[in-house]
Image 1: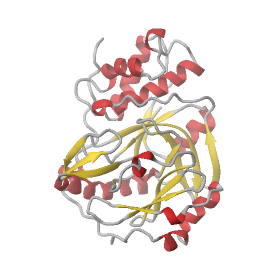
Image 2: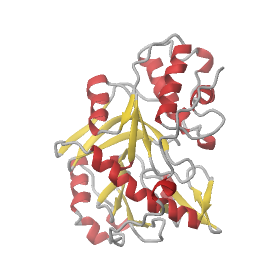
Image 3: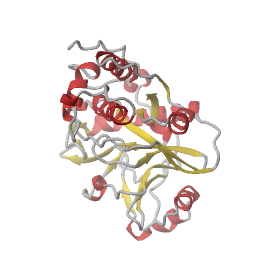
Image 4: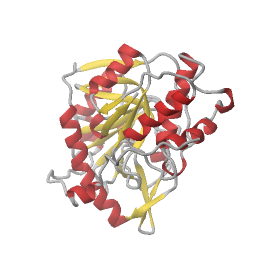
Amino acid sequence: MKTVKKFPQIVVSLLTAFGVMVSTIPVMAAESADSLSAEPVVTNLLSSLGESGNFSAVKTLKDANDENRYSYLPFSSGGYLIYDSKFNIVAEYSTSTSNSYIGSTDLVYYAGALQYFTENENSFVEIPTGNIVGSKEYFTSYFNAINSEVKRNYAKNRSSLPDTRAAHYISGNVPNYKHNPDGICGSTSAAMLLRWYDIYKNQKYVPSSLESGDGVDLIEHLRGYIDGDVPGSVAGDVFTGIMSYCSSQGVSHPGGFDGYNDNYVIGRVDTYGTPFLLIIHNHPTYKNHWITGYGYNISGGTCYPIVNDGWGDTNVSINPIYASQIVW
C-alpha cells in the first residue's frame, strides 16, 4: 500500500511563530461552589440541558501555570461540566459520563477540551494514555502560547446563533474506537467516520477483512494513508488519506475540509446527517488532536459539537473555541 505524502504542516508551531505569549487577561481563581452556582454561563447551560449540578462536589483543576483556573462540576444525574474562569466559558461537558480521567486523579492539570494531565517527577503525563509529554517548563510555555491562539481562532469563525437549541444528532450510532497509540488520532477518528458510512450508506467502504468491534484492523490500515511513519496529522493529511483510501475501495466519498465554522457542524448534522472530524489545537506533543463528531447543542449562543474523544468516551460536548478545522 502506498503511503500518501503529507501536506505541508499547516499547524505551525506556536512557540516558533509567536514566541512564548503569556495572555494579558488576568487569571481568576477557580470558582467556589457558591460563586459557581451563581455564574450565568454555568446556570444557563444547566437550565438548557435540564440538569442540576452537585455543587458540593466541585473539584479545582489547575492550568499550566499552576493557577486554579478551572472548575469541574459533576451533575446530579452523572454528567459533568468544566468551567474556565479565565475565558468565562464552559470548556466541555457531558450529560452521560462523569469523566473517569478527572475522577481517578487527585491533581489534574487541564489544558482545554479533552486534555487532562498530571505531574510526575517534573514531567507531565497525559492521563488518558499515560504518555509523558515533556517537562513542566515545556508544558507551561506551550500552553501559554496556545491559549491566545485558540481564542483568536474562535473569534474569527463565530456564527450568529439562536440562544438555545436542544441537542441534534445524526441517525445511526458512530462506532466507538479507542485504539489510539503513538499519536495516530487522525487514523482513529477517520476509522469511526468511514465505518459509519460503511454501515449506513455503502458497504463497500470497509471490506469484511477490516471489520472488527474494536476497529484496530481498520485503524492500522488507515495509518498508512493518514499518519504514515510520523505520528500526527493535519487536515490535509486526513482529508487526502480518506479520499485515497476510498478510491482504493472503489467508493466516491463526498468529502471536504475547511476552517472551523459553527455552520459546518450544523449543516453536517441537520442537512447531510453525516459524521465529521474536528481538529482541536491543544496537544503538547502532536500540536493537535482529532475527534469524531456526530451532533451539536446550542446554549447561550454557543454551538457545542458533540463528539467521541478518540479514547473511548462518547457524547462529550466541547466548546468550539478549541476547534480549528473540520473534515467530512
